[in-house]
Length: 552
Image (tube, rainbow, N blue to C red; front, side):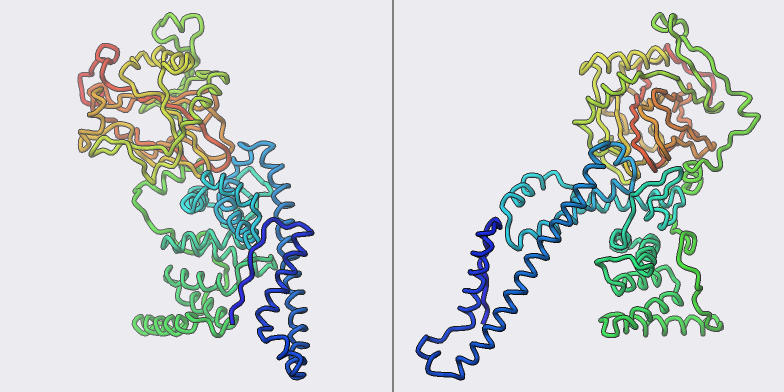
């Protein structure tokens, strides 16, 4: 016999009593379907009711315990989040500048608040559900949480950070209370596992197991962690360790539906490999799995290693001979009237190709206005498809951007004019001022700003020729990471608020300078704001005349 209880509304003391009475009545109806006459004519049946009553009392106590447990869980949630939101709302941008905080915010809103909603819905709280419904449209979804997890893995790779450092909030030059729990690490590992990224799955599942072995409490079981970890280690080609982990799983849960079969398969496969190689069995290393235990799989980017080394400040090819050729000067834009009385300070960042930095090119007031105009329009940054010329999103560019026209505000017009004055190039044919914000793990992998010969239609729709030069404004300092690097010649340029860097993408002949392939390194800690102006060929005929050779 199935007995379903009705659902009440908001819980009050009076409502609680009503619900208890409803509960008792419902159980009585389920258990006592005989008539009153039948009850009194059968002592046997009456004695049965004694035991029924005992069961009712036990059920009633279980119901009260469940109600109290649920209320205690909700109170615990409220206390924890109250303390958390006091910290986060005191300095939202500073709080989100730490990548672990940004990831955990994604995770809380996408996963944990939904779990709380399910808990409350066991006895619906109309106000809470209504509020959740209103705000849910603004919540991050599964894709956002996955993206935030992958951002942490990207930072882990680029800056060679082990999972333990991340889980304890220990980043270069930064230490905070932003920690990852066993369940956080497990979810990170599962995200990688579901993406068939077994390299990162191993790193994070191993960290989850370590923290659990150290006595940290968790919702996830050790058996679940070992299940995912053992298979991920197998996928990394480490059969001895996969066998050892699977044996631990079988010892914990002998009835596990996959563990026994996996163990037999792994052992048979290892014996076969040893016979084929005529080798004896070697027990797995007792060293814990950590960064460097397994080789990171190669990907689509040929200069991955040099690019990431530059992001860490390694491999920079700044020799003493090159440094001696770098100078600083006052720049008046070839006696431009607007710069004569107040020339800009110009510093050489690199000699060949020539990259310069302009100091105090943007004021704090201008920066704040540009950010204010851009924030409502920030959307996933796009790249121009080389085949179609259409803007589209790409996995190698992770940021949000907006485009601002000069007519929108006098400050935008003033910034555009300043770029023209400093560079001596017309911005009439340039693209709009693009504003970009790189948050947690935000990056733009190595790319060319100009279109190559195999991309003839990249800027055809604009009708202004190729991108002859790039003017990049740094609108924030970045606590860690976020450099602009040039892997071809080993240069790294670090963000400095209010400064701008400038370089030519094309030689005077119109041929592309392939040395200018560059990247925006992932932001490790902080929020990176930039704006840039891509200046095109049309209109520069007399401002930057053609050279006599292909590489002038």
